[in-house]
Image 1 (cartoon, helix red, strand yellow):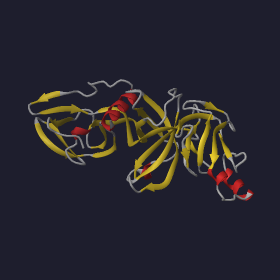
Image 2: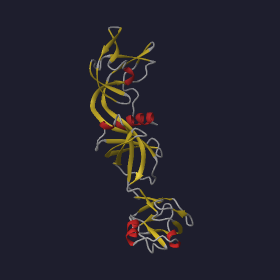
Image 3: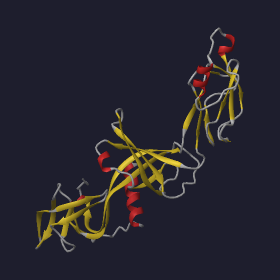
Length: 293
C-alpha cells in the first residue's frame, strides 16, 4: 500500500496527474524527456491506525464474578454511569480489607459495599467500543473489562522509522489514506512526537489530528501516511528515473549522448528537483530499463 499512497498523494498535491507533463520522444532503446517547472514535495512515510480520543480500558477492582452487566458494545454512556456489578470473592473469605485499602482500590471507578460486591462505573462520557466480559463470568483484579473512548473525536496514531524521526515535528502536514476509504485522501497535522523508541519495531510514535471532519465511526482501522517535511513551488524537476547515479544525467547534445553532473534538491516519490546543470531545453535520456532511485 505504501507504493500506491505515494502515487495517490502526488495526485492529491497537484490535483489531477497529467501524463504528458513532460515532452517524451522515442530514441531506440531510450526515452528523451525535458525538465518541467512544478511544485515538489518531500515526504516521510508512516503507518498506523485511527484511535478514539481518550481511548482507554476500565479494569476490575477485585477478583469476583459479574452478576450484572448493564451495557453492551456500541452503547453511549455518561460519566459515573453503572457498567458492571461484581460479586467480590473476599465476601466469603477470611481476608479483611481495611477502609484505606478500599479507597485505594476505587481509583477511577467507585464501589459500593465492597465486602459483598462492587459496582464499576464509567469514568467518562463516551462510547463502549468493546466489553471483554459477560454476565456470569469470573474476573480478576486489574483485568480489563471495557474499552471506552470519545464518541466523535479521533487521533491518528502513527509509527515513524528511527532514521526519519529527526525530520518530524509538530505542525507538519500529513496526507492520510485509510484501509476503509480506498483512494480518498485526508489532510491532517502532526500534534505530538514521542521521545521513547519502540525497541521491537525500531520506530517512534507520533500523533496527528484530522484537519477536516472524519465522519466514519470506526477505530483501529489501518492507515498509511505521507508527512510533508519539505516543499518548493515552481521547482525545476525531472522524473526520478532520469538520474543515472546520485548526481548524474545522460543528455542528448549536438546529436550525441553525454553524461553530465547536476546538483539536486528535493526528492519526491516521482520527481527530483534540479538546482544546477540543466534547464527546460535540455534533452535528458532515460533508458527504458532504468529503475527509479
